[in-house]
Structure formats: structure tokens, C-alpha cells
Amino acid sequence: MFKMSPNGYYDGMSSNDDNVRCPMFLRTPADFGAVIREGRKRAGLNQATLAKKVGVGRQWIVEVEKGKAGAPLALLLRTLAALDISLVADERNRKTERTAAEKGGVDLDALLNGLRRKRS
Image (cartoon, rainbow, N blue to C red; front, side):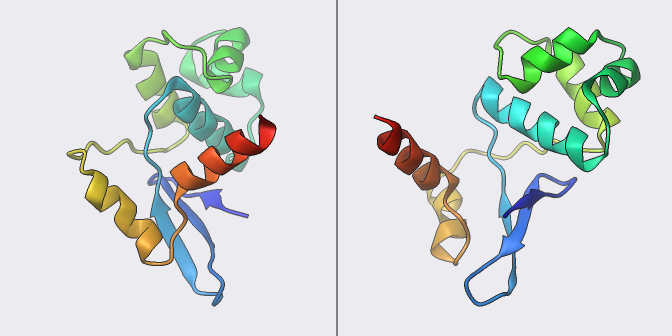
């Protein structure tokens, strides 16, 4: 099992039991929703409590966690800050993104693509 750290990395165990940290690449509203949901759970908050901290209704948190598109950036940033999660921007470089998997990390794209194929 992998757990997200506050700095956007996933901590887990590799096959040789060394701690592995893989960056989380946020590309879709569903990715942001997953980060927020995991951060909320890690913080021990329910949706209503997080909503109150952010200054939104519980339904907004529900929709964001489900990956609904169109959430205002300011509210997403406020939600991440409430969960003590930093968002770091970096130049997109596909070769760099693959490096984590090549070094024994987890290639989330390959994992998700494999799961999508199994459903079909």
C-alpha cells in the first residue's frame, strides 16, 4: 500500500523493503480529487470538517473528491493548504517522469492503464 506524504510523494515499500518515494503527477481533476481525499483521510478529517476549514459546503468537497471538473483554482489551493499539502510546479518532461519507475519506483500511468484494460 502506498501513502501520500504532505509534499506530494507516495511512500511505500519496494520488493527489497527499501522505502520508495514517487512523485504524484496531477494531470486531471480526478488526480486532484484523489490527493485531497487521501490527504483528508490522513489528517483524520471528515468531509464536513474539511469543508468548514476551507470555507465551502460539504457537497463541494464531495464533488472535488469525485474528480468533478471546473473547481476554482483558488478553492483547490485553499483546500490543499488546509491539508498541509504543497503543490510544486515543474517543467513537464516525459523522460523525467519515467525515471522513477525505471529506478524501482511505481509507474502510476502503467498501473492505471493496466487496471483500465482489465475492466474492459
